[in-house]
Image (cartoon, rainbow, N blue to C red; front, side, top):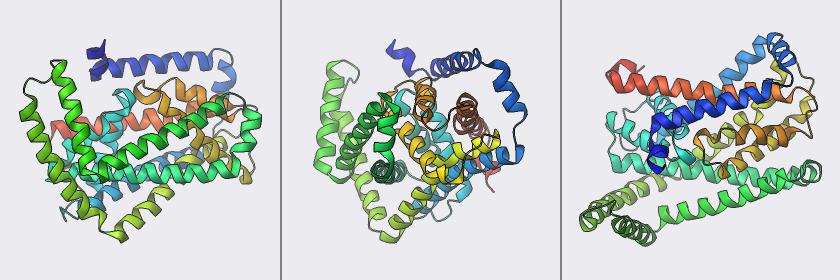
Length: 343
C-alpha cells in the first residue's frame, strides 16, 4: 500500500476517482439547477477569476525569480512561473503535498541553479509564504472567527485545530531552517531509522553526503536571509497573493449571478482562509474530497443558495485547471529543450 501511495500514476488515478465521486454527489440532488446556473454564468467575471488565479501563480514565479537572481542573474519570471506551476502539479499528485518541492528543485537544476541553492530558495519561499499565511489568518481569526464559530458548528473546531497544526509545522520547519544542530540531529535520526528498516544500506555514506548538502543549504540560505529588502518585498507580495486567492469565491459568486454585497468580501476572505487551515488534516493527493466538503460547510452560514455551484467552479479554477496546466508544462519541460519555453 505504501508503494502505491508513492506512485504518481496511482495518485493521479486516486485524484480523478475522488474528483468524480465529489462531482457525482454534488450534482445528484440538483443537477438541473446547477447546470442552469453554469449556463447562465457571467463570462466576464469568469474570465476575471481565471486571470486572478494565473496572477496568483505569476507572482509566485516572480518571487522565485528574485530569490534566484541572488545566485543566477539570468533567471526570469517566466521560468519562475513555470516552476511554480510544476510545484503545484507535484504537490497535487503526492500525499500531503509532499512532492512539490522535489519537482521544483529538479526543475531549477535545468535552469542552471545548483541543488543546494534551489533547496534554499524553495525552502525559504515556503517558510515566508507559510509564515505570512499564518499571521494573515491569525488576524482574520481575531476579526471574524468568533462570529462564525457561533454560527457554523463543529467544522470550526476543525478549523481551529488546523490552524494549530500549521503553527506547529511552521515552528519545526523554522527550527530546521535556522538551526544547523537541529537540522543535523533530525537528519541523522531519520537516516538511522531508515537503515534499521533496511531502506538505506550505507547510513554513514548517506549521512556524509547529506551533511555536505546541509552545509551548502545553510550557506545559500544566509545569502538570501541577509537581504532584508528582498524579504520585506516577499512578505508584501505573499500577502497580496493571499488576498487574491482568498477573495476568489466572491468573484465566482458574481460569475454565477449570486447576489452578494461588496462588504461581504472580508467574510469571504476569512472563510476561504479557514478552508485552507483544514487542508492540513487531509493527506489525500490534492486534499480531494475533504476540501470540497469543508468549503460547503464553512460557507453555509454566509451563502444560503448556490453554494454547490460556487464550490464546483472554485475548485475547478483553483485546483483542477492549475493541476492540468502544471502537468502539461511539466510534460513539455521534460520532453523538450527548456530554451524553447523561455520568453
